[in-house]
Image (cartoon, rainbow, N blue to C red; front, side, top):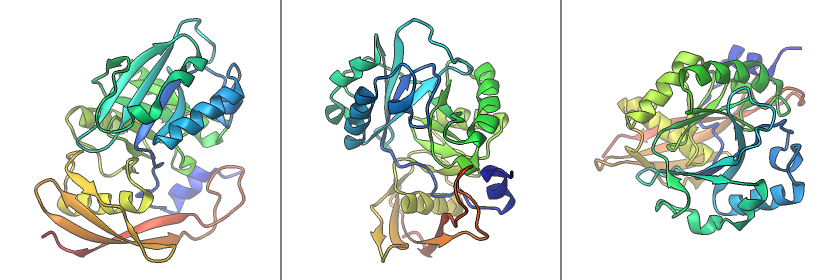
Length: 300
């Protein structure tokens, strides 16, 4: 059987505009094993508590994700590390806290924590994080491609690298997100992943393997990356993206603003990719939608 990631790469499927949408991230250490629906199905977690935390976090703009240090699949017996992250340009932050049990997250006020002002939780964490999707229960490509990458990065970037349960876009495996900026990357190798983390430390991002900034919707992600490519801009917080104006179900007009005052208008169209292929291993064949941006006005 040919994998979804092989078919996506073989057909040259564009990655721009395929990042998961999340202004914030809730990262909870859970060594595993992980289920396909991680917070409600993984061994050792109460599904009712997991479902409640996932819903409350999502309502506040946080994507709840389980993480573990590379290679760890059995409980360590110690407290759990939790990261709460916000990705909006000009207002990114990461807070790290330790909890004794998963159920302790029920006491967190996610709505109060959301936004560009860091909450008074735990302690500030100033280093980038890179999360590599490795959950083979979601898609086998994440296991076969993601785990070797996570292991390599665990050696080269210890303390910075975590395995994650789900980042979407299995067909772009190995895929990873660098936080707190929220830029998501696909078809990575270890050298490129290290470069992405180095760029984040310098306040920048990498354009070539980027799927988009999770802060924005899919059309907005594609519009931002189109402007970045046009002006060769890699400063992470240089651009702001307005809410896309829809034209039916498959087209949008998007305004992109630079912090220096320049503004662009980008037309984005969703196009079904051909030939048909599965968006994830084990799913039926279909035509995944790619976001196709076109700059219609120069900077002004």
